[in-house]
Amino acid sequence: CATPGTAVPAQIKTWKTLQDCFRQDVMPSKEVAEEMALACMSPQAAADPRRSGIERSAAYFNAAAAFNFLAGHGSTGTACESALSCRVQAFGMVERSVIHQEDAQLGSSANGEAMQGPSLYRLRRALETARALQGIADLGGDSGTCPDPDLCLDMAGKRLATEDLIQIAAQMEGNLKATACAALDTRASINADRGTGFEASALEDFRNVVKFCPDLADTASQRLADFALQRANQLAEAVVQPPASAAAKETAALAAAALAFYQEAMPFEPLALEANRGAGRMLVRLADLEPSQAQAHLASAATFLEAASTLAVTASAETRAEDLSQLGTTYLKLAAMLRKTDSIRSEPLVAHAVRALEEASKLS
Image (cartoon, rainbow, N blue to C red; front, side, top):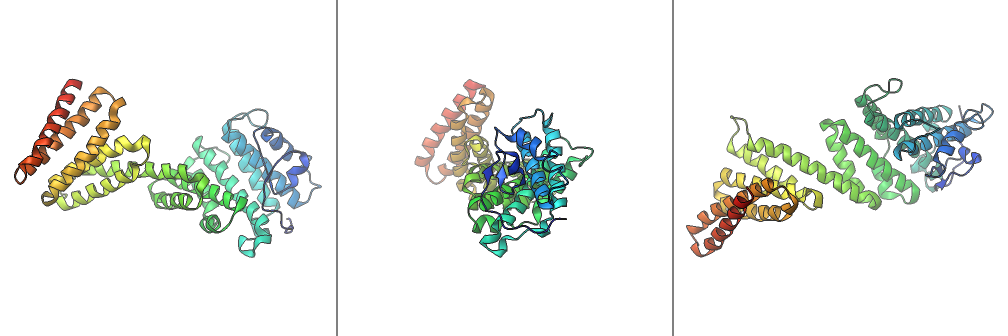
């Protein structure tokens, strides 16, 4: 076992030579990752019994970081022949790092600026462990590590669960903040892969990434939008085909929830078409379920369906015809309602409906 070492700077530099293997503040790069992996795991570094526990711990960790880097960048070769073998090597190396210097022997970020180095190292080690396990899960598991991908993800999630990543990301700066953000994003991704039971945790982490981690905010926002669209489609399916025993009020609540999720996904261009289309269809359904608000629902539905038909210019003719047919039908329903109280306002809607339906007919 090692004894606690002195605080290292909370800065991370690129690995260059064998001597860097014994540092807790270096990282791989594309140019040196394979050399770093081989050097740091070698008999001259991590496997040298003459070295102290702290030195061997650092060397094993740096080898793990390099193996994960190789797997993540598809740079297999002498160090590891496949992405899976890279991930398995990374996990084995980081586990040996912990054996030679346990987390309890490292400082905590709560102990002030002087302890940010050990805190950063501990957090980086947890992150590399989680990355290795998530990578193994993505590749189908490994008989010697975790044969079942779900087990790999469970192990990965637990490795990051004990770290107060949100507090560090919110309050710290520099490499400690950046590492906490990367770990927060990784934990969110892992929990997203773990299924519906961990979805709430994943969403919370992604939202905190958006809030505290500018460099990762765009990607996290996209994941949140993907979640929103997925959930909207699930709810919409229940709205379109409700159980026979479902009351109109219950179905309307589901439609309103689906609408809210569709609106959350709309700002992201790749999802905008599906989100606008889905929102329009939910509002048409709400018009049937809530007659007292039907006019407002149909007016909003027409807006979303109009946007969908504009966005669908590159869609298939059949899809565009369906969108235009839905739009035309919606305009006709709204015009019929308005005709009872305001025949002048209903006339342009009829014209819009006829135009949409004619275009749909041409595309069919």
